[in-house]
Length: 359
Image (tube, rainbow, N blue to C red):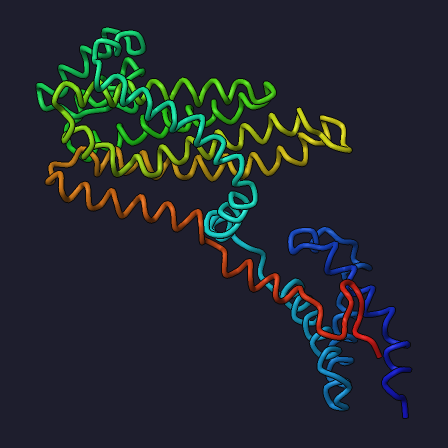
């Protein structure tokens, strides 16, 4: 009768071979394997499953059972599981992968926040207390447009004031729904464009990203200070508080992604600059993609909720909740899954990392 030590010695090569299959094969790439490789994978899955049943029946150790059980579970999911749909891939990216990647590179985001929100706050304070300085940052025609839109109680659009045709896009619409849909498309195009600029200009050693963040921060701060100084504070703040949660945060997120590109070129480490850009650039693109999703959400809020005829207090309440949601999402989304994965990946008490349990 074979003892535990001889059994492990004999079966260890097959377990390691199967483990190599699991590490090197995804659900998508499994379908691209040669027929012989798929046959081998199927055979190894059956053999490891049989080994697991044998070890369980003989009580040869919890660590060994856990190790083989993990291999069988992963192999079964890989071999028999349905390939993920595009919708499920997108959901996983938004709910898990993007916030995880964001937190792993949060230093870039904090730097971008400093470059964006600090000049925004300073220019806001300065212009609100000295409105005559607004003309040094904001073109006269845009300032006149602000005066007109607020005095006529028309829809404010401070975040997109630099677009000359923003009002003309909704003219001639026969219904509120058509008008809102048109403005939503405009906001999506404009806001994603700003984020794309913050990200893409990072290729210029990060200088382009820094300039874009500083410029937009100063401009938006000046706009805010000017509008409030003219006595339109309640209407302005109740308009921007809701969509600003997603929009302003997303601009900083995209700026952080741009700074990642710049840092990859400036500090490539042991890689060439091109290799560094390939590795870090992929992560930066994924983070910028998350910022784009946030900006789409912001555009929908800006088109359908922000200009709605509800009380300012209700808008303040909803806006505060949205700011909290953005914080909780970026701080905690996917966190439990991270901890579960790390716990599952840890070796048992008698194991060394990367090794089978000892006989």
